[in-house]
Length: 193
Image 1 (tube, helix red, strand yellow):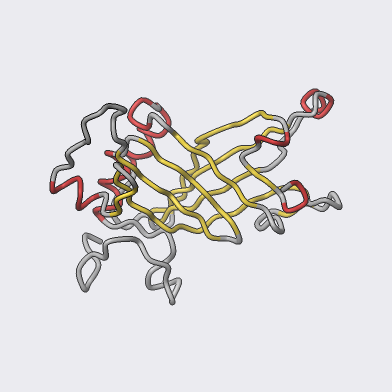
Image 2 (cartoon, one colour):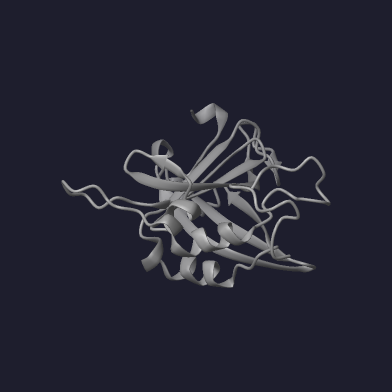
């Protein structure tokens, strides 16, 4: 799948038909932006995930000049930075306030994580190099994947995984692991907000 039949959209849009255009289907500009991004931010709520690939402005008095290609790959200006937003499917797994396990949609939970130096993050660079046009990307968070020692210290271990589906093949990569107190977690349940 090289291009969208009517030309490539500026962003990956949610689909009305999951079989025709599943959420998270990558187009050529999506793949290129993910490979060239300075920073990549991930977020999820209510089954919808977002990947924001960004070119960042260097902290100086001089504004960054973006090439025409960079402006095409990162179409959204955000302050002095450029961004490409890709909507994907997302799951947040974890225990609710009543200690019931939810494998897909932890009620009221939100999640976020950022890879600030994407060009220096070995796992992200490997994932970005693997991505191809036509792959379908999904984000999966595991909330509170704790050990007894972490629980005793009042800490929580949250994980972010990215799934890449190519045809019938599914590859899963662990992008981030965070061990933090409740106030600074990657995954925030409704009761904890």
